[in-house]
Length: 210
Image (tube, rainbow, N blue to C red):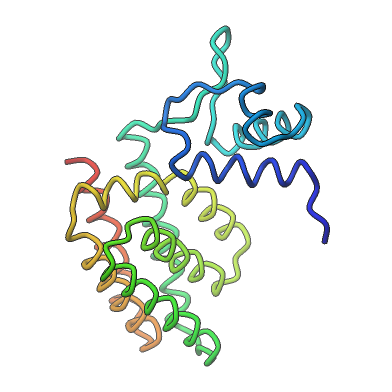
């Protein structure tokens, strides 16, 4: 399927925001983005409207557009939502059979997480970490949960990297948590899987607060 200019503008601008091109609170203008992306105003404006609806940019009357920044409390709220969603997901997944293709996907993902951990690659690990959690939701096949997870992960991407920078041991603990969660799910132990997921997310939240 051919990608439209609006979709291309959205994808490229989103990558800039989630990457290192812009910092939270940075001021943006449509003209600046037109030059940076080599696109006209129409697809840029459409992309900004979509990103604003997703909470990644904010418009302030009489001031303009800014890259969204989140208070600690709002980030904590995001984590609380994830706990509710992801404990539900792992309980459901623990109660069903797993295909070999599903198991293979997670084995490959965990191998990539381990490689990024050994390389101290925070960005690479964060991407693999996000993929792990999102794939659990996709295996559950609840469209609303998947969309909610995608939206939350976009907002928490920068925060996740910040957490890893604050606690250099977090990558190893996070990787080990993921291995444990996956093992509990495929072993059909829902209560333990949900408890492990809760501990995993609550630990990240505590680091953020402190």
